Length: 138
Image (cartoon, rainbow, N blue to C red; front, side):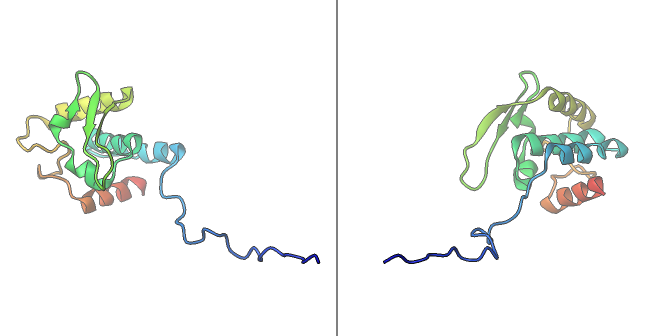
């Protein structure tokens, strides 16, 4: 005896619980980067965006980057990953290396170990970076 088996109605996908895309496309990144020249901290902001996009950094990983993690001579960066991911040394792309060199020159000899410093010369917080990205995107 044959039974007719019908597929369930396609009201919702099986993975409806999964989140939608939570990353930028290259075009969206380029548009975001176009907002940085209008800031007085253009090199810092551009470097932060480039490192985050090119190396897939979490905001907290960006906040925790130290000046010693970046080797501008050899164009390398050490990334201390969070949440159990593997920490790695990665090459810097030419445009981010140029931007980082300009930023470090502008940054001067600040005594704090953090790579990116806010206006007051302190370590960035997650909320401050989120705010900056919101301003740049707007």
